Image 1 (cartoon, rainbow, N blue to C red):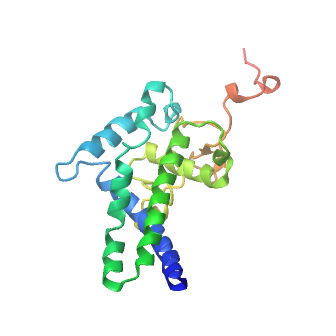
Image 2 (cartoon, helix red, strand yellow):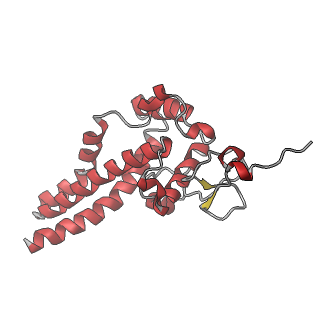
Image 3 (cartoon, helix red, strand yellow):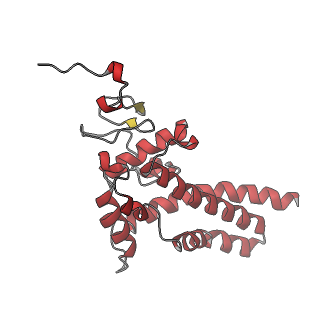
Amino acid sequence: MYLFLSWAVAGFVAGTVFASFFEWTLHRYVMHRPFAGFQYPFRAHALVHHRIFRADATYHLLRDADKTTIPMAWWNGPLLVALCQAPFLALAWATGLWGLLWGALAASAGYYAAYEYLHWCMHLPKQRRVERSGIFFRLNGHHLLHHRYMHKNFNVVLPLADLCLGTLLLRSMVSFAQARGPAVPDVQPGRKPHQRAAPTPAQLPPDTQPTPTR
């Protein structure tokens, strides 16, 4: 049992790292361009999701009818988790270390669940507890920049692949009218990475509203 648990832990760590690179590859080469004639992910993500949700105020849901374009289709989860297990299944089959496979399976399932939940909270903020965390704050800025630069920041959960593969962007290269909110960092050029965005006048308390100039 100890040996099984040890390999399960190793599989969980390896599965998490693999999931980051799997997410990056899927996002860049399948969801942002037609892949071998298979256009469903490209149309659903690049043509629909990115058309509705941009890096400005539309980064947050404006029309309730667009809510269904935030998550993936229900069958994507089981399929993607199963695909992630291919190398671990082959390794477990060859070595008999089945704990490795179970650990990787738990990591992949958890990674996908985190992807869907974080992505949902990013585009439909409700001041949930997770949205008040520093990790979410940084990941939200990371994803906001992806909606500004679709060739950057492909990871949503763990930007390890972005870091290793040269697509990590910490702040915008030009100034733009970005989305604002308590869980949205200021990603403008010249700012420190992940500095809080200045509130708009509408977000200020009544007694601190700027006095209009004549």
